[in-house]
Structures are given as structure tokens and as C-alpha cells.
Length: 489
Image (tube, rainbow, N blue to C red; front, top):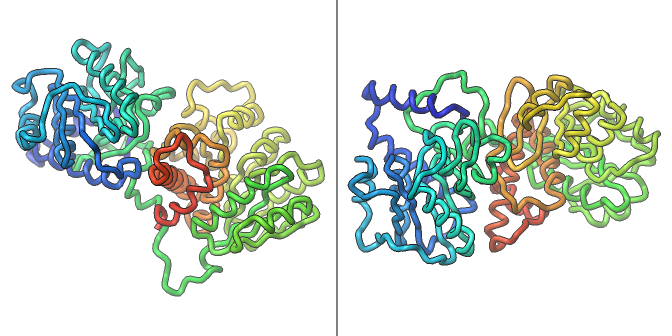
């Protein structure tokens, strides 16, 4: 989904209305249907709510919220900021469709499995919240905090967040999932806004055209570009892509195991793991039987051809000087897409390695700062977006800057990942991600496609694991592997 300001979205809608291409109620019904389909497919929302609590303002956001809530066969509690007579005409139509026996306006009890829907204010709202909106936002946030296994879903944008700047008023809704409609608004991607926006679940505006100047995008379910094409019936392992991995050291064998097994789960036809003798017996005994484990006395013995993708770095530690030099030579000579992760990034920053343009780098914020100090010394970008853009200008490659809203860019294209959540705050998630990127690259996806597709898939797989395991605080990275084939299929 494209990124555009509120004014751009509003102008596109008005142009469609004035041309007679669509009427407002028809568009609302289409949006509600798209939202229902997206919600049904979202792993975090695979539960039957005990109640749906809708917080409604005067505008059409309330109509979207009520229309969605009406799809659930459970009590619907309406917490309105105005009298029903003051609702927009389209919102009144949506409310009239709700069976009266399911509808109430009482103060909601914090029941387990409550779905809370924020339809108070749309993306055009500016400035501090007036009453009763401020009180309703506080009530909404408190209900989210006290109702076990609850989900707060914001329609278009969380109430209180400036859609263009990302400034959060006091109070501002703390959503678990936000459903930007038509386009993602820039403020939703601002540094710090993620704590209010939560996971992005983009909703299209059927029949509405947006200007091609909206270049940056956010990954969303159904993006064909992020999916592998179906395999030919005659496909066999040597045509499904080979991934060669250089990873692991004493004390860090888990990283090597997870990235290799992730590459298998993501469909690579062959996966070979190269390691030094000190860890070979451990890895050979631990990793999945589908993985070929090759001991090498030096990284200089690792072949530079025969693989479509390479992954170097997870759990490498700090190898001696001769092996550092061998790794730099491998990076320069290896044929195929090159994924550099973890300790390979630290070594690159420390030693100033030459990074080829076909490489994919996957730093977390700390690694990014070390890389920036080496490849763009003296630079102090103001935002994460500026940081990513500056780095690829100085060091042409494909970059995935990790975070609550990971940024993928190659300089000419930029994408924000819209999946995942705080349940991924657990060591080893990056190893799994790197293995999936390498596997998708080996199967023919471009570096940008493979990186964006892997981030999207890993976030969805983590959400599915989180729900399947009963909403624990964190999901172990190895638990993602069982869900990846379904996500990527």
C-alpha cells in the first residue's frame, strides 16, 4: 500500500464522488467488506470475541467501525462521543443494520477476549482532544489494559495521533492493530508512533486512484511481489535454489542452527552450512537432517560458486585475522545474492569491508550505528528513514533496518514492513529472518523482493505462533518455523 498525506487521500475520494464513479455509502460498504476480509485473515484476530466495544465519533470512521463490529455474532457495546442523531448519514445507516438485541451503550466490563474498535476520529483530526473524546480515549486504553487477551483495533489511524506528523497528543489511543484506509499516512510511520499504531493492517479503497508520486509503500497481505511464484511440476532440488551459510562459533551454535533451518522451512532446495572444526560435531548433531554440514579448517576453503544465495554472519563471533580476510574475499567473490547479518555486519563496520551492490544487509539499530560510523562518518541522520537512505547512498546495497517498523530500501525503492509485534522481542528472530531472506533469494526473488517478503512472512508467522501458543509475552524464533511454509505457500 502506498504512503500519502490526508489531503491526498481526501482529494482522491472527492474526485471519485464528484465523477459519480462511487457514492459514499457504497464506498463505506466496500471498505467494511475489505476490512472484514483482512481481519479474518489476520493471525492476531483468529478468535471469537466475547464482546465488541466500538468507540464512535460523528464522522464516517464510526460507520466503518460499526459496520465491522456488526459482522461479529456477539454483543456490541457502542460508546459514542455524540448523540446518534449527530452521526454522519452513512454511519446512521450502518447503525440501523445492527440488531437491537445485540446493541447496548453501557460501560463495558473488561471481559477476556474483548475486541475494542477505535472509530472516534479520522485521519484529518488535528490538535489536542476535546471532551468527551479525551475521556473516551482514556477509557479505551484502560479497557485494553485490563481485559485479558483483548485487541484494540484502530480504524484508519489511532485517535489522538497526527496523521501527517506522527505527533501524539495526550491522551492518544494505544492500538494493537491500525487499519489505514486507502493509503498509509506518514505520521503512522514516524519514529515513536509505533507505540500508538501497533501492527499495520492496510485496507484498500476500492475504485480510488492515487497519484504515482506516492512512491514509498507498506507491505500488505496479497502483495504479489512478496510471494514466490508456483513451482513447475518438474521442479527438483537443484532448481529450487541452493543456500550456502557460513555461521556459528563456540557458544553461538543456536544462531547457525536457526538460520539454516529457517532456510529449509522457506523452501530452499538445498542448504549447506559451513563451520569451523570446533563447532562441527555440535552442529552436525543438532541441525535438521535436511541440512548439509561441512567442516572447514579455514573460511578460505568455502567454495565461492554453486549457490544462488549466501548467508554469512549469524553466530560467527570474532574470528582470527586470517579468517576475517578469508571472509572478505568470500564476500567479494561469491556468486549469487549475498546476505550479511549479525557478526558479519560488526566485522564489516570494524574492518571497513567492501560491500558489493548485490548484498543484503540486515542490521538492528546498534549495528546500524556502527555501520554508519564507518561508511558515512560524521553523519547524524534525524530519523530512521533518513538513516537507511543515507547508508545506501554511501554504500549501495539492499538494507533492512530492523525495528518495530522495519525499513527496507535499495535507494530507489523503500518499503516499511507492516507485520510482527512485541512478541518478537526475543533473541534469534534475526537469525530466522536472515535464513528466510537467503532462501527467497535462492529461489529467484530480487534482493529487494526477498528482503521485504521475508520480513512480511516472518512477522505473520510470529503472530500465528503467538496466537497458537495462547498469547505469551514472547514467541521463540524456532516456533516460527512450523508456520512459515503456510505463510509462504
